[in-house]
Structures are given as structure tokens and as C-alpha cells.
Amino acid sequence: MAETDEFGEELADFVRRVAELKSARSVSADELPTVLDAAIFELDHVADQLWPRFQRLSSDGPSGIASTDRQEQQLLKALFQRVPVPVALVDRETVVRRLNFAAASFTGVRAGYATGRPLTGFLAHADRAAFRSQAAAVARGDGDRSLTVHLQQQPSAPVRATLTALRPSGEPRSAVLVVLQPADSRVQSGANTPGPAPNLTETTRHTVLMDLVDAMTTTLLSAPGEGRSAVPERAAEVLHERFADWVVVDTGAARLSRTTVLGPSDTTGPPGAPGLSDAPGPSVIQGPSEGRRPSAYAEVVAALAAQDPAACPLVVEAARGGSTALQVRPEDPDVFGRDTSGDPFLVRANVTSLLCVPLTTASGPVRGVLTLFRSGGRLAFSMAEAQAMDMMSRHIALAMARLN
Image: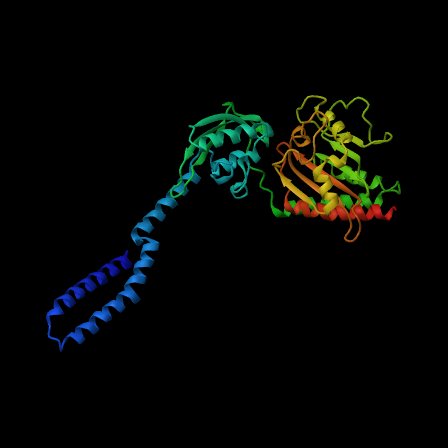
């Protein structure tokens, strides 16, 4: 504000001096050169001093107004973050622009991670198309909408999403304000209550990973010489349930073949499904069930065991490029292919994060591909876990090469 006042005073003085110069036009011819020199001096002052200051103040806006606007914006941001109702601001493609504290706690997704990613990526696959359609309708001015969706981490709890259009200041297009609230008013307890992930320290995470690496190394070094195909199978057993809900192993150099599929267990397996110690075909195991109907997981395991790895884009890309792929809440449900009925495997397995790791040494060929899924409310794979898995994959590949 002080700079604006100072400029105003200087401009007023300039106007008074110009008026005096105008009145000096009646002086004698001998005195006109002095008046002309004064006029030129004033013009230089305008060009060199007043005009640059005016441009700077015009671009920044008056200091008082700019300061007030900034204070208002900061107040609105603070109110948005502190509102006790889960609220998200998205664009017409559902890409998250802002997520308040209540929404981060409600969805279990950090605001910094969510920003820039589609909000539909945090919903169950079946709800994504409907949510996109309703958000686009609201953004183009068709009125407010409301629909029931399900969070991918908590698919059993329906969530009511209310969408309304909002035009941010200075922007040509409308954004969409999304309010989330439980559709079921009954209070859920225990593991069924959606909330933020456990606050594990970095030391604990590192210890857990080191224990896993130790278990993997012990298994690889102590495994008897049963053949090269037995190495990834034993490695898969170490990772199953302890590190991932699903473990899929494809081996081979020229052409991949599926050798092991380990999934969440069920009380009954698919009819005629081969066991780990049975003869030819992929090894199939089920682990603990989480409330699904008795043969649901067994059907998915059997379908995965029958899948041709060549029909799985993620596996083909890992085998071809030799690089690890980490995806959290995969946006493309077809990235691991479809079953014979046309349903995406990621949807059937309720996959919330995945790791796809080629089995290769630093200079050797790709000897196979190891794919890990986590589902339901389990924590997503982290970058540290991906790095540890990349190291273990090289150890597995070395053990396979040793048995050639």
C-alpha cells in the first residue's frame, strides 16, 4: 500500500509541474529554451521512472488489493482443508485437484498422492464409468448429481458421492466438487472401518523387508537340486500371503509358460485342479479366505492357471523390456488380460496394487516373469518393496541359471 501511495504522490507532483510548463508558453522567446529543456526533462522522467513503475504496479495489482486477495485465498484453502466433511475438487475427467483432510482419512489415500490422479482410480471398477459420466454431465452444466459408489480398498461399504459444479476464479471451465459420505449410516467396526493406513515407522518397514529377503535367500540357498522350474515355485511360496495375496509365475526364455499360481485360499478348490505336488500344469494353491463365497477364489486361480502368458500385456512387456512395473490402483483393468468369459482378471481378483518383475540377472536373458497382486484393504506396494523385490528377482534368476 505504501508503494502505491508514493507513486500517487509523485504522479500528482508531475501533473502540477506539467501545468506550470503549459503556463510558461507565454514567456519571451529568449526564455523558451529553458522551458523546453524543463519539458524534455519531465518527459524523460515519465519514460524512465513513472511508466516502468506503473507497469509493475499494474501487473501486480494494487498492493492492498493483492494482499487482500491472497488473504482471502489462504482463508478459503484453510476452510476447504478443515471442513469435517470429505470433499474433493476434480475436473471434468475426474482428475483430483484438491483433497481435504477428511477425504484423505475417509479414502485412506494421501492428498499428495491423489492430486493429479483420477478419482475413479480409487473406486471399484464397476463404478468408474458411471462416476465419469456423471462428473462430465455436472461439469458441462447439466445440474447436480448424486450416486452410490464403492471404494476399491473397502468394496463392501457403499459410499454416497454428491457432485456439484464450481467455477474457480479466473478459469474458463467449471470444476466438480465431490462430497463423500457413507451410504450406510450403521457404524462399522474392526477391519471393515475405512481409515488411514497404519502409521508404521521406516525402521519397522525396513526390518520387515530384511526378514523377507533373508527368508528368500535361505530358501534359494537350501533348496535341493530339483530342477530349474522348482526355484521360482519355492520363491513364490515365500512371497505368498507374507508379501502378496496372489503370486503368478511364468517361466521360459523363447516362450513363456505359466508354472505357478498362488491365490487367496478357499475351503474348496476347483474340480480337478492340480495341487502343488501333482503332475503337469501350473501349481495351484489357495491361502486364507476373507469372507468370499467358497469357490470364488478357486475359480479365479484356475482361470489364471489356464491363461496363456502371451495374452497378458503386462507380462509380455516385462519379458520384453526386462524392467519392473509397479502399479497402485491400476487404471487399465485389462493390463493382465481377461478370462474366457471376457472379465478382466484384475477386477475378478479385486487387485488394488501389483508388482511385475522379470527374472533376469544383470547381463543375462529374461528367464521368467514374477507377478504379485495385493487386494482388498491391504497396503499397496511401496517403492521400497519394489526395490527389494527387484533384488530378490535377480537372486532367483541366479539360482535358476545355476541349475542349467
